[in-house]
View 1 (tube, rainbow, N blue to C red):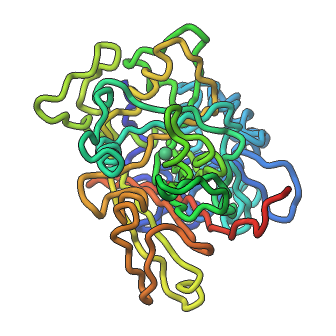
View 2 (cartoon, rainbow, N blue to C red; view 1 turned 180 degrees about the vertical axis):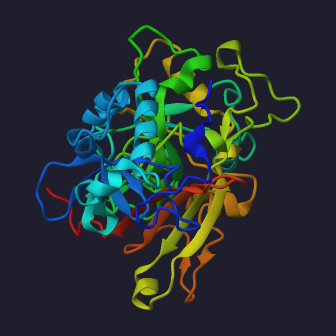
Length: 442
Ligand code: MN
């Protein structure tokens, strides 16, 4: 069960908002992603807004002016908040009613234009925050290409563990260290063991990496003890964003057995500010991953019709170093992949997560795991892209990178494009590496 395509996706729709109709833009009226913003320098409370063109629309302000009525009104009023949680918890019908009302407000000739000064803030003049108050953060491992690549580096004889094609593998991450796009990420200290013949050491990580991931934001939750069937799983998703699951590979290699990632991952996770709703994604659905002949079918509780289980979302990683920025060199495209390459669908991730009765709550974040595809250029982390550092990247200007150095900045981007449809973008998920603390407190 996916969100329907309706008149709000019509590529002929135009908006009175500056920049909304710019060719190749990210935020046309057909997108309307939600985020949390504050006008810079005002010191006021953050509010929920939608991105359109190069502006942010203050949704609650529209409700306060009586511009949003009917079913959408309560949803708009829930946007007078410093997080998306209240809106997310109202479920898909409320979010859809609000989307429809916003389209009426913001379309060419719409009633919002007379109130433009009160409703809109230039994107350049706002701060953007983590979109939801994340109570629980789970990270999956849903790309079979990523799992196979990483497995083959660590277990050449047995790259893919026998559970992979049956179980959507995941681990519980840390919600407290989720940070907004643009937040500096300090290189962590950690315990590593660089050689089996040497004792472990404690110091700044030398193998810092990013992971290109898609974040699934939970909308309506499920009660403890009540699994969500795969057929209605998407009605518990509010939308998707971008996630950078920063990873200290040297720490990870030493600590992960037998319980999985811990301090190698929880020092920071960067999220993009805008959540693209499942409604906005409706025209960009794609078939489920085609399992190769011989792969087992999903068990019954994970079985779903294949035709629209996937999302045709293109994802990119851009890298710039301090030297590149000083020289005025543009960031380099490090990889480009597709969310259609994931072995498990978003509905399967939700269904599996709740299959034991685990309760998901509005605003929770489920990340997909590193999005990697079959080609070298579509590998979504440096561990794979440089093959454990053995094939360093050469950057414009001649620098090389096996893993991230201090001052490196990683920008993730995502967009959906399809003939006859307005292109929609996810904005960016940006983070720059700050040097490790020079000394450890003690
Ligand atoms: Mn990850």
